[in-house]
Figure: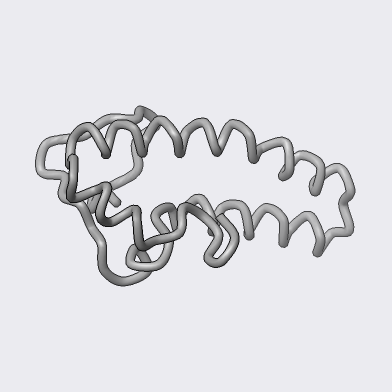
Length: 96
């Protein structure tokens, strides 16, 4: 993915490179996966049904952001990103 800090905007910033090694060699969006696991984990730890529901309601906007990011990355990096995405999981290894 992008080897820079997080931004609220979906944008390519100067100096960004496509990172394909480490955890990015398995999952294209590990920070989003971590956010989801963390949120679900806290909800379950506190036995909060509301927390679980809120975590699940967070999934559709997250998928929309992932789609926007991947469209931008595909447009910017072209075949390099297409090749990368063909052998990695989008968010959850073995599932999605």
